[in-house]
Length: 166
Image (cartoon, rainbow, N blue to C red; front, side, top):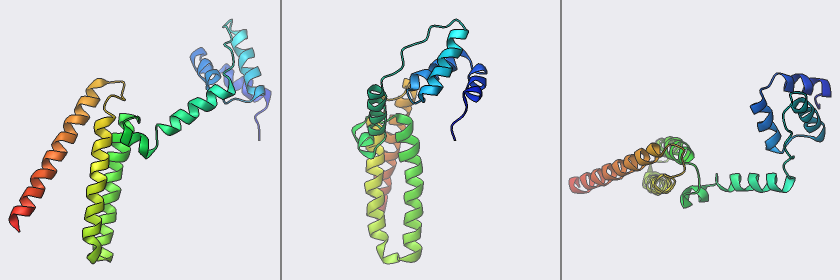
């Protein structure tokens, strides 16, 4: 059910000029919503910007989608936050859960699960390493790279320890 012009007018009246400009720039409003929003801007004496072209909005959405795929993470095009928290941390926890399930349900597949874990860790670390510049705060990029270096060093040391024990 579409909101009425009156409901839209009440909603827009309660918003700041900055919020109204942000809504206008999205390019996703209906014609009616644009008309009501632009009327609200004019009533405040604010210049009404040109409506975004649907082609520009579609291209921007396509680019944002492309930058959120696993390929974009591997290529270093995704945001550092996504690479670190979504792929690195959440993905790691999911992989640990899968490995625990494999160990409980099908113990003979543990080596396969361990191999998948190694492949995932390489993917996650490379993704974080390559996405380090894609943040508004450069310090986070440097810290993320430092943490990846520590993780890799730890993994190498752990691997060496396991090999030399056997």
